[in-house]
Length: 373
Image (tube, rainbow, N blue to C red; front, side, top):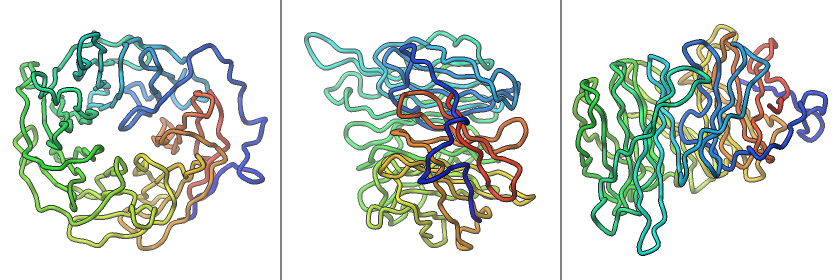
């Protein structure tokens, strides 16, 4: 499926379509891991990004926009990474890696957790969830957390250890956090794909030495089964996943040999999708286009140009074409569907502001010009 954008000559965005951004010291310095553009229970979209003093948040003023409020600064010092997970109740969970410097030794590194119950409202208090290697010299090597929220509201999050292991921690139905669980991984690399299926079971894929390691939850909120390794190589931090049929994920990553995006489903073949993504994961989304179930993808190329494409869900073999949006970013983009059912592309601009492009009424995936919030 051919994607179209609102770009003009050589990918430039029309000046009249970009609202002036006023610098007030609240510019993003890094994107948030996972789905950083989310829709709340009130149907408003919210975007998040990292700031030197914490987290920036922009919120639609009303469902479907186009006006936004923010950025609001949610202060928490010493964050190095931040990942988001949203539950079926609409609550957004913040999972942060914090590194607090010490004068007489290595920094104190732990995972912090907070929640946002309603769009645009204050967060809960931040609580430390510790470090699986807190009493060893490996504590400072803990990786970035990634997680999901099960239909029952239980948070599951995973971290990579300095030795290449993978550890799981989750809360229980009484609201208490269980002990760390060792997933018995070896040689795990940074970046992992954590997916929640319609069944409520969690799927985890992590790049390892010479193959990707794969786990599936045996039942919702239950234990995990180690599945057969997948003999593939992925560019570090590039893997992401999307449930494309009940109980079946499609995994996307950057092939280090060709530099292009590929798609893979268990039991199938690796399908090249083209493109030339920079570091970081490709954004993926299922959406209805012209009445068809489709998968939308977005990435940034090495020059920072944001590219979009679409295809029938699980029909990557039918071909897709990457189209430039006219915006440039140093961070991975995000995709969401707004209250009107339109595909929305979120980008962190070169000046640290939020840029948003929405699908217009033309056939296929036709994106309007980006607007700077």
